[in-house]
Structures are given as C-alpha cells and as structure tokens.
Length: 247
Image 1 (spheres, rainbow, N blue to C red):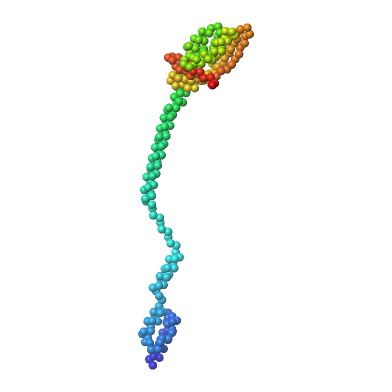
Image 2 (tube, one colour; image 1 turned 60 degrees about the vertical axis):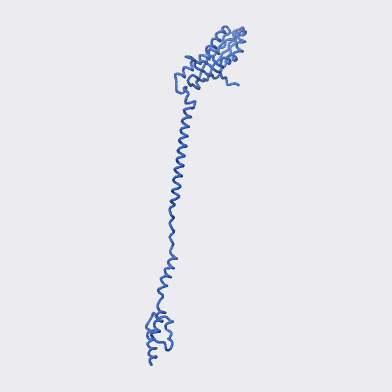
C-alpha cells in the first residue's frame, strides 16, 4: 500500500537526519500528506535565528562596563568667574596703590624725616656749642657780681625760660650774700634730639659745684640732667624753655 511505503520512507529520513528534534521523530497522524508534514518538522527543528543573537547581545551588553558620560564644560561659569577675578584684582591693586601713597606721604611728613640733626652735621654742631655756652652762663652765679648772671639771663633766655630761670635760682640768690655762694655749671655732654629750621631740642648733662666762701668754706658737687628747647634769633641760639623732667 502506498501508505506503508510513505511510512517506511519517513522513518529512513528521520534516521539519517541529525538535526531533527525529538518532537519531530514522533509519527505523523494517519492520513496526513507528507508534503504538509515536512515543513512543520523543518520549522520545529530549525533553530530560532531571530531571537538567539539578540539574547547573546543582551547578555554581553549586561556584562560589559558602561562608559561614564563626560561632563560638559561649564562655559557660563567661566564667563562669570573671569570678570569677578579681574574686578577683585583691580580693587586689590587700587588698595595697594593707595596704601603706598599714604605710606610715602607719612614718611615725608614724619618728624624724623625732617630732623636735620640726623643729616646736617654743621648746624648740629653749631646749636650744641651755642646752647652749651648759654647753659654754663645762665646757671652760674657769683654772690660778688650778681649783675653778671642777670646779663647772661637777658642774653641767652627768651619766652618761658626767663621765668623758669628765676624760679630755679631763687634760693641761690636769697642765700648767696649771707653764705657767699659761688655756683658754677659746666656742660659735660649734650645731644641734639631734634633740629628743624629755627627750632631745636637738646638734652644737657652738666656738673655743678656750689662753694661757700665764708667762714666755713665748703664745696658740694652735683650732676644735673635736663632738656632745653632752643630757637634761633638772628645769628644766635636762645633757650626758650627748660624741662627738668619733674612735675
């Protein structure tokens, strides 16, 4: 019978075809034509080529590390920051310029910069000599010639120094006739603290000897330190104030 022949051929093909699946080896239903049955078996045995590559690609895509996206440059930030930095630098440079100008002005106006005692040796030596001579004259007193002390005071004193000198020598003038006092003052050292134009301030170191020439002759010695303010009048220097550093 033709049906038996078809079955025999079908079994031969199944035995010789390795790519057939187990589901394809089952016997077909009785009465189904061979031409209709073979495509179904072929479709069931053929691998699914549409889904396999996609699955493989998906697996590899999951395993592979994903690159990080590169950050975009912040152009707007650069445009904002640069003017701010330039503005800050401008303000800083302006402040430095103002400070430098103020410092230079203060240095020019500073009294030490105007002190000729640091730079003018000739004038410094002149004022030291004149004031040392004036101090020796006005702070010396002889009971036998009181007019000499008066002439020295009128020659070398001016301003407040006139009254200060009278107050300082008041006791000497009072006791001098009775005790026959002779006061001698000698400047041992002097220094010009400040010299500016016609004004100067000097520190004076002096030795004083006070001698009683009466019946009981006696001499006492003392050291003195004081400062004087001097002013220039014409071609000479005068003592304008006396500072004994006492209140």
